[in-house]
Image (cartoon, rainbow, N blue to C red; front, side, top):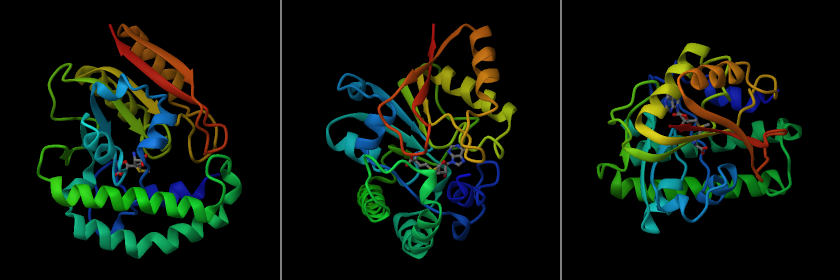
Length: 243
Ligand SMILES: C[S@@+](CC[C@H](N)C(=O)[O-])C[C@H]1O[C@@H](n2cnc3c(N)ncnc32)[C@H](O)[C@@H]1O
């Protein structure tokens, strides 16, 4: 069981963050997004939605390379100083949890807990620097699944890392299907990773049902292997393409 991720998530109540003192920020880099979602150079030129990007620096890095990305997350109602203080406050506790649950992860691309801490902190610092300048630019929007403030087919590609399917016990089937339909409404293609539930480290109980329902709606759905694996066994992404 990945208690560590449960510990992070339990502070969210159905996607609505009540107060910052309950948030545990933890974010990934463009390099990890590339591997989790098999992103090609062509993909990175598309109009992208980062869904639940939190303190990941994906948006900062893609934007600084001239890309077109909007991130949504309920933590974007807070400013950079507020998020930074919260990161500083909880970082030592997070590292302690990772150490305790070290065996839940594959230490291949990231070789140690110390390296993980350094990589995540660098990613969050890059996010904070960018967010501090561009919070109001339109690249960071305070919004939550399952309802997003965008038009039909506004994006080419939506990426959802470490939110849907991972928290299958806390986000129910109905919320999953509504969220996936909403993402399919606003974008041509959706990629979601990982697909394992944190509570079991096994395939999310919602995955097959969501795939069947999307298929009935005429969406092309498939499971595609990826190179990335950190949570043990998380080696596939879900790809949903509206036709
Ligand atoms: C574990 S973090 C992942 C952050 C980032 N995607 C990454 O991989 O580094 C999960 C994120 O989901 C966000 N989240 C929680 N409820 C959400 C909702 N209903 N809609 C969108 N994002 C949500 C949280 O605020 C948090 O930033």
